[in-house]
Length: 245
Image (cartoon, rainbow, N blue to C red; front, side):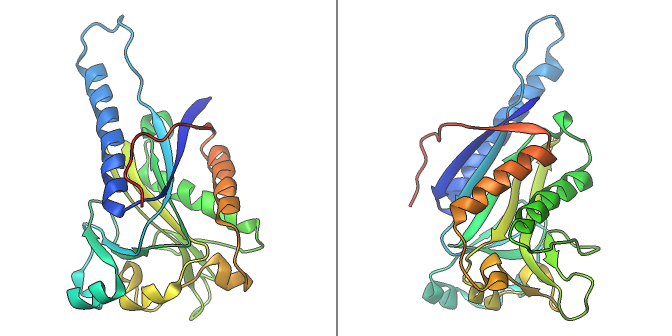
């Protein structure tokens, strides 16, 4: 069975986590290049490694490579007042928010060991979250033409997103991932057009239940469902030296 190495990075700045992901991705690309270029197939060659990172970010807005800056509704001065940082990223998708009370997941997977279909990969990520929130009696679903996990997606005027997703894939190695609103302060979404969608709202597990839920409990559920959906064993690894805050 495939093995995925899990690390919980705790509270970490967005750019630090991005660099950490990038290093893991580049190491896998190095391994894949060595396997491709080695003419002697009889030599034992290093295998790529699969990772699942969890973390929480301080207040930050991030925008994907296909995003539109007009979906950020505040200027630099207001960002400073709100104590929110901002990053242009190399993931797909438009603008979103990360912050306290969110469980952010970054899978770094070599999809050649899973499924070489990026659309299927995204549907699998959505399935993990759909199964996770079902433990709380919340029925999640998909919105045609959009990524992420939605509630009441087929009811006009009621569709709301509970989990945003955006990924990058290079030679079938993934990075970036998902952000599930657990006990998130949703007011920070008021300063952006989330994911560039103007007629849909954002929600959280806390808002849907009318009470907060333990984020560590949610993380354990995500790990369990990730293992089942991706048919892999998720094992805990040691966090390398990292600047956390």
